[in-house]
Amino acid sequence: MTIQEAQAQVDEWIKTIGVRYFNELTNLGILMEEVGELSRLMVRQYGEQSFKESDKGKDLGDEMADVLWVLLCLANQTGVDLTAALQKNIEKKTKRDAQRHLSNEKL
Image: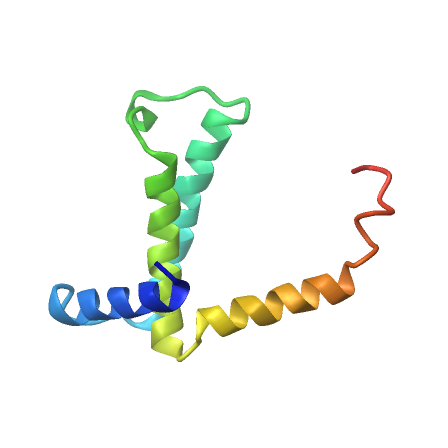
């Protein structure tokens, strides 16, 4: 599935099953919640925090997909073509950082 197809599929789901989009600020808040859930799982799986009973059984891919879902919703609501935006962002980083990381002694 392409990013464009994902945007279209989420839009179709919202319009047929989800009834309507939450407003943009509500979705921004939901995005922050989902990022927090992803962060919580990451610091338990890869960091130094131990799992609580309520954390067990959570799936990292599912948490990432929750973040992506809300980001796709926000893109649809604000008229952002994420395919084009990502390509432009990659080009920006490539131009800006062409030598930066190669000369970083920390890497």
